[in-house]
Length: 374
Image (cartoon, one colour):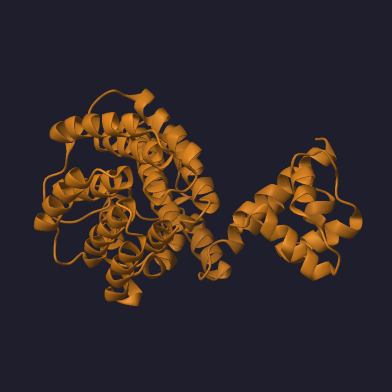
């Protein structure tokens, strides 16, 4: 491996694993070293146009919280870097707990059965809708440490892919960097399963998550396009992909494409939508479709369509899901902003967010608030 090229890639991956921009890394290096460094130098390092000097490698290791050897000898320490990154991105879970669970499962030569993992997935699908990300992260991280020791058949890869997708959903970000890396791995795991529905669902779920959040829109489009190309069969995965792509189009100003995708999404929903019932992240009942469409049409400034979607969703939204009711109220705030009354729209959305107990807040809601305010 070319050493200059390897170091640049490691720096970029370490930076993205922390959810930092190049500017943020430059600021951290400036503060740590006492010498001013600009974003452009970080860009040149990551693009492999220049290799950092030993002086800057030591400061990079310090601010990125990794052993210096990872940057000094990237070829030998590649696996060590990946293990280090995995251990440092599972907070608040203690790494030793994960290692213990994973090795325990491997040493026993056993773990939950395929059917038991299916039941676990059902539980997580429900928990995601009602609990905050922090409340399920620890359990989910431990289960990921265990299931990775059992991925020796297609069905296990399918279950692992869905767990990895959910883990990615608990790590949204303004640039989607940490979530994106997990969505990519989830897609690869889904491909290992050979199951078409899983392959489409994982990519569709990534697309709607990133598109709804307004994060990493090119990646949202990529996952959506992959899902749509894998199978034309109406499915929840295809439905998610269509709306992920629609939100990306709306945010980037392509209103005609966004409206056309909304129309196609409604056709797919008529054939593949979920029955209203138990709330789960794996389903898209009528009220959840309304949430997708409410924000989409609010982003487009289509007030009548947005209000219809909100009213329909609100009528069928389970009372146990106040977070989604807050989403709908905040969409109304966005509509006011789009109509030209920024002050009233921001105040309306902030009031809705403040009415939700703090423990129910999500980063997605905070990102939505930032979108409305800006």
